[in-house]
Length: 119
Image (cartoon, rainbow, N blue to C red):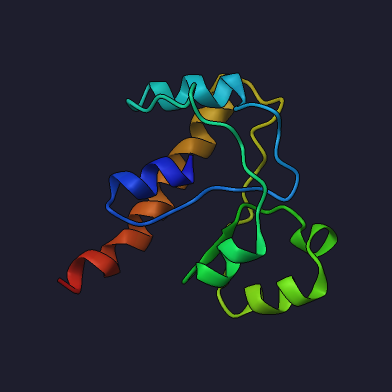
């Protein structure tokens, strides 16, 4: 969700996880379709060291990256890590996924504001 909103805002973004699912959560896909995004062609990706090295900012959604990432990766990530501490939409009804989606959209828009005023 965050990647889709970030790209819409003109940011360079990639979404990845420490334990990615086989496919996009269908309830998430439905919630994002309501906002005009098609995630049906997307496949969850594994977070890589290269992604972290190339990122200006690493946003986590509340997952425990400390348990999944090796210490050297964590050390590089800490300098640019922001944890949004959001609920995982997995297993949640559409109404809850919408609430999570809307919060992610709000936070991405807030991230994009400083970038757009620099122009």
